[in-house]
Length: 236
Image 1 (cartoon, rainbow, N blue to C red):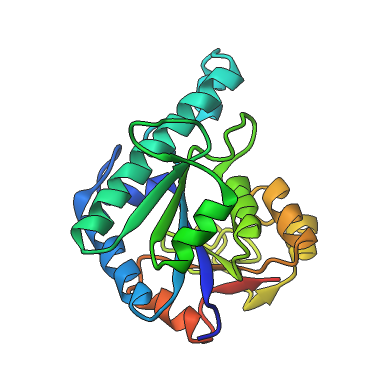
Image 2 (image 1 turned 120 degrees about the vertical axis):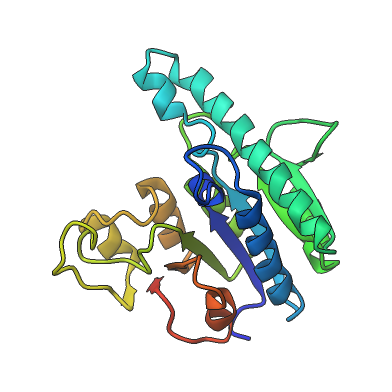
């Protein structure tokens, strides 16, 4: 396998399926089945999930709410999604641990780097909830930070909108847009391409941490990436 330890980044919207809001149970089951397949290949898996299917801090700010308050609400939304995925994974027979950046003793362990790494070494799926625990930072930045902390070899950023990588422009708007097979972190920043937010991309560049952007809904893509096949776009 090309990668031994990975961090999988999912957006909150990717959990909606055909719904306009919330969580689609069938979509969760599909993700759990695919994660189980790669876990059985001996891959150590950490996961970060967004909360956009439930609440976004930016939405709160647009409505006049204090941004800090809104961002903390968004962190709680990521915990709801994390708990839902945890349940789906455990139903499929996997051992999981949910680690929160904000203390929530009743439902999650506090994030401690050494503990997270130990869970991975024991073959448990580790889910990181509540972002970085700080307002003004997205779950993209949380994914980059956690990946570096656990020494993940790659961030797998799954898309769910039918776009299977990084393009020169939005392929849904510009029919002439072409997909990059590989692009550097710096080019993503200078070209203003929407891969992850600029803080996350800059952090990954500084840490020499590659990102693979791919179509999450195409079954088998994650397994193909782990085997070293050209799937989606490699940023790095």
